[in-house]
Image 1 (tube, rainbow, N blue to C red):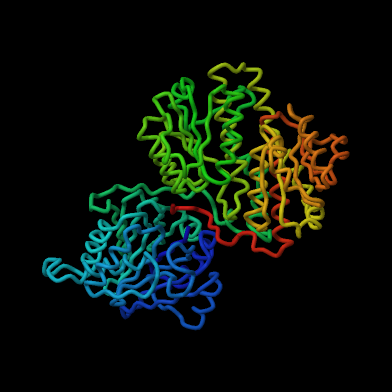
Image 2: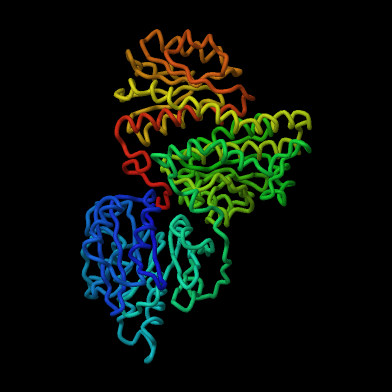
Length: 621
């Protein structure tokens, strides 16, 4: 949540900051702002409510001159999305500016104390205590030895301030009395330092950096970077040096551009054949009939000897985990439980040395999932990460893991990350299954089917226009049901979530058999009901559920297997998917539901990539 961009170099900062904010707008878009130090040591600030375009328009009227600056796009937590609550926030002297992602839990007591010391506040945010706390130490008489430079004073004051904060933060700090320095620090909220040719860009996401450099340092928790025109120094918050590794950003600028698509969600839906092909590349060997997951090879024995698997995730990733529960128990014969990460550490999960803990997060920064990971590690589980963002906190803190390799996902409503997660979790299940009991011949059957998935996805996407035409008459219906059984139950949940997220239509996903235990009372004449009903072990039972809906006047849209003409007897509309093994069907059946939700949102006139009240990466509880 929220996006940070900071720049220090020889170019004018304003344009780079605005460009970076636009690339981060999916992280928050209710307000934004920028502060720049000019050559005279003046700190100038511009803030605006709404989208980044509003800020850019304001900047055109009042230019921010200078080559060092910080900027922020906000997703509101404390305080309404009004201009006084937009970042950056200044201290009461107007000399120190801060942008902040996260939540300061003890801001109330700190604010009261700072007011007693003479500080003044102008916003309703928790963030404003940070510049004022830094300012308190920076200006405190006798705090520093005589002759201490302003730059050193700012660094030391920032360290002292951070030791007083309780909560999470990713911050950048700039001061008019040290115009050639920016300080960045993180605890629970990601920050990346891009290292260019005589310039540095700090951001909460590499997307704001990749246009300027492919070299980056991913700050770890409780780490700080002090950046000057002469270079950078990284250390812990309490000033222990850290030897940071400069890594190559794995994706290019082209991957985060819209190209010829109207929305990132549309682009990411249509990227899935290529991205799942990339996810499989080098990992399945049809000639050898083997799966090679380099990220977990060193722990193969522990995976095989495990007696239980826990999966924790949030949102769409949780749905991928539910699919994996079926797959793990069917293929690997490994008892599996799936938890909401936000609930996991607030109960007493049974974990021992024979437990595997899989944590799933596209960003690798989801705060609830990270907390669940730490709880599982404390209890002795081997922790496996399934993440997309290289260098993310979860990727670093897990014992081992597998990257999705599906490229950056910009759209708030996750699409290719879901299919990437299911693909990786399927490979992990097969990796374990082959070493436990699965025959070589059976494994080869699954590998061959997995290898065909990308081409089958491409065939489904050819129905895009038909799906748009089909969904249009139903877009005024405010209540939908999504129903499936077995492997398709999590797909029903995911389809309902997609429709809710971006079209703001109320939708529920549930097991088809549960409908008659209460929810059938919701069905009214003309109500859209989506059944996911491919040829599978429970096909006949799902058809019976479809008849129950038809008898009550519901309008059925079905996702079915190619060649199934009988299904047309029960459904007004059918979206066909190619045939595949039952365990792999979710990789195909989810695509029509993604397109359905996308077109519904567009037809209803909503901003697909920036749905209200939502942000891409949830880094606060």
